[in-house]
Amino acid sequence: MTAAELAVILGVFLTTLHIFEKLLTLEKMLKERKTKKIKRLLKSTKRKKNNRQVKPKIHCD
Image (cartoon, rainbow, N blue to C red; front, side, top):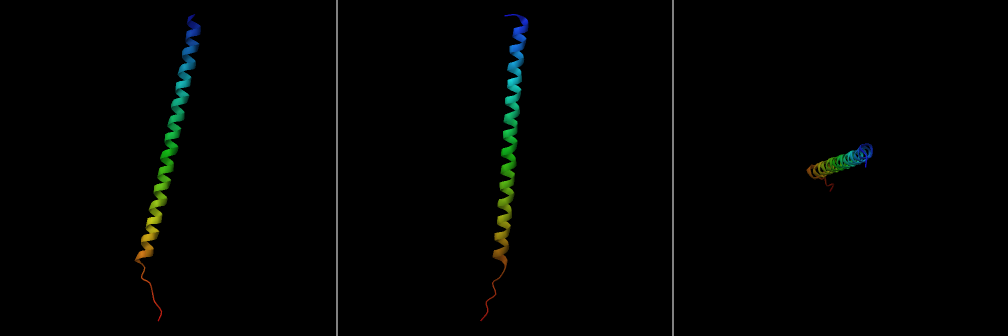
């Protein structure tokens, strides 16, 4: 193999690694965003439940 062929193979390999790394980073970012959104929704539903429990019920006789 010539030096040019080795350089091309090395370039393709490094480019593939770079793309794979970017995809993993993107996947991690999307998972974090999803968990943050879920946590935010859970907190808001907890607040709503707590607000309902605090309000006294008025009974009409």
